[in-house]
Amino acid sequence: MNTKQSPSTSRRFYWKEPLITTLVGWIPLKPGRVLRSFLYRLILGRLGNSVQIEPGVEFVNADCVEIGNGTKIDRYVRLRNVGRDSKICVGNWVRLNRAADIKLHSGGSGYIEIGDYTSIGPYTCMTGRHIKIGKYCLIAPHVGIFANNHVFTDPTMPIVQQGHTYKGIVIEDDCWLGSGVKVLDGVTIGRGSVIGSGAVVNKDIPPYSIAVGVPAKVISKRDGTSSNSGKSEPCQCDSIDIQSQRGYLEKLI
Image (cartoon, rainbow, N blue to C red):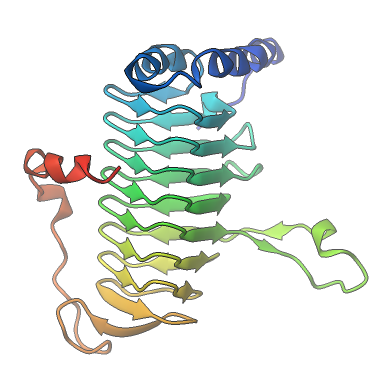
């Protein structure tokens, strides 16, 4: 991945992004959506077909943001790419609901990836340098996905001056995170898992698990067996008939 630009290109883009978003970013209803679907192609790294971007959506370093086909972005969503060597990739038919806040930290060729047909709930916060969310995931409102940590080993220095650590978070396909779930850095949530509302996930969750509590503990498998029993059969997400699911997907935003 190469997102670096020459100084002259960066200067030209510096004024283009705020100018276009200021001119059309506030316009409501269908006229605004149509104008943004056309003009935002000039500032975004990629903008797919049939994308709907509502008023008040904020981009930072929009040329390092890619948005797939059929995606809907609700009011006051923020997509902020602090670094120039990183990329935010939003898949096809994704739903970013009201005031979701996605921030990619600078440095180290970072990435935030959101897979196809995933819904990110209102007021969800996602921040760090390496975050990957799979396909068909349901992320409820007020979820926190924090793929970074503060260094605090030196008690003589303010924590804010000691920097961060970054391990990364992976949420595999077909996961459901309930309202208020917090996912901490270094965690992988296995495919098909369900995380109960308010849980704090601070360690890996095996595939097809149901986990609840603070910290989150696996209480059962999705096939009804105990947490220490055999492996469940995987969901064949790639074989889903998308056309039959369109009515449901339209209700996710």
